[in-house]
Length: 378
Image (cartoon, rainbow, N blue to C red; front, side):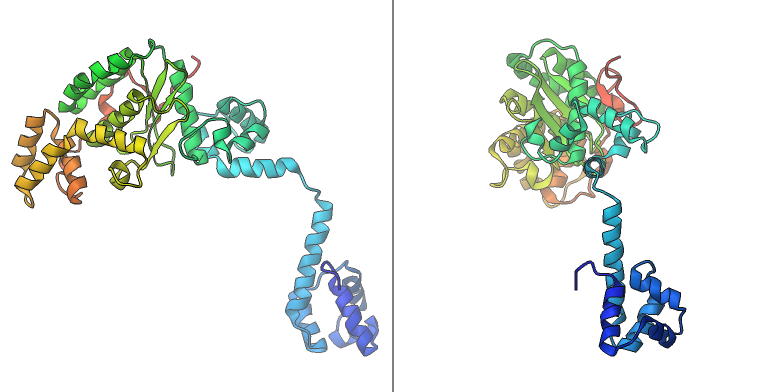
């Protein structure tokens, strides 16, 4: 029997074996003869009730009749609904990209997400492609269009494109590695208080570094990125996924080291979940990340000094010890607190020192998110 046979064909075979007519079957089932005739012709469906009655009569499981009915209906539907390539394309596009989140953030402008033509037009503009077919190619093979050190998820890719679009709008001088080297001690001097972070955007811009902050999209887990628009235009993007003074300075210095070493010229350096072992020196951490991690660690609290402090004070660390050590280092106590939490695994300690940064950045930073949309092209 064919895979797409009607239930009526099976019933016809069973009737033939018994030498019955359709009228006889109707009488046995106590159904109208027209009902049986429609089932036999494929114009009527075998219901659950009818399948159970047929099971009693022919000793064939009811599931067999119901499965034949289901497969037959699906085959008929496939014939009636011819494949639509655009439907599959849209399923990929809308199933992967965080369309709703992008619309909510103002990255794509549409009043109705059900208006697929309008949404596709916005996405073409956002990704800078001529057709949605190119977006389909872009998603599963992101490196073809935008080279990244690790294959980004669609949400991460959307975030990267937003950072790139904002960075392209900034007016900064040509990058100077010497200037960025000279700026590091000045940046370190800002670590005494959270409000001093407001000077960071201007100082980096003076060195030719485009500094952008874009709120992370849900599930993206991005901390930062380093890439170059051209040979003279490095970009540092942060998400402030953890709005804490210790995390801000660690990620910022990490990305600065990528710039100083020329990382990100060939492929964007995307830093995700930059915490725990990924922020350390383990053998599983890529070499360029180990270099950036060490620079960030020593910039905040040199490893040798942190080792000595822990050796002297462990296992008891008092508020007085923490603040005194921070004063010696010339940094905010929250920076020491963050390092101490990481080293000891005691994340409940000294949390009151982990000051927020975003509210202190001021109006000079190129920032997108948290209810504000950066005005691109205005």
